[in-house]
Image (cartoon, rainbow, N blue to C red; front, side, top):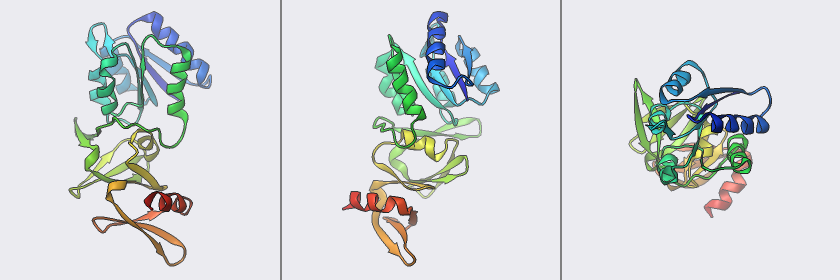
Length: 231
């Protein structure tokens, strides 16, 4: 696992590194960058799994990194004193916002969100970002009908019937999406607002009929839970 820490104050960077090593396996590789430019270069040169990002980098705005790489597959945890930017950060789909000053317990909570599988409720997220060539397009959460797993990528199926490819896996997106979304199958996450009814098919198979008449599979292990929620 590769973790990148972008922090301009060396003392704080070393403290974050120590706490990170205390939590993760000793085999974790930690990369350090002390400026906006070095952070951008490091992300371009390495496939990282987690970014720990300060928002004030010697007067430069760390949001430039967030905006440039929000569509990438890695998760981001913000560590910053600029708590007024927390809502904006969550809207961009960050996993957590750790306010400075912080202690090891608070950072551990953020790491637990990263390592714990399944949904980690984030009601403030407003959109997901997808790469379109060299540009980044922001997809509104409310425009997503359902999400389909496609290997290490995902397909965002939108209300206008377009499909956008996202770099994050289904498991990663499940951590970010609000409670209006539910994992109904190993390969599908659906927006509750789009669900019409559950269907029991011959052979003990289950499906969910959407309001646009599309039919999605429902995992056997998920059926009882989903049926209860739809009552």
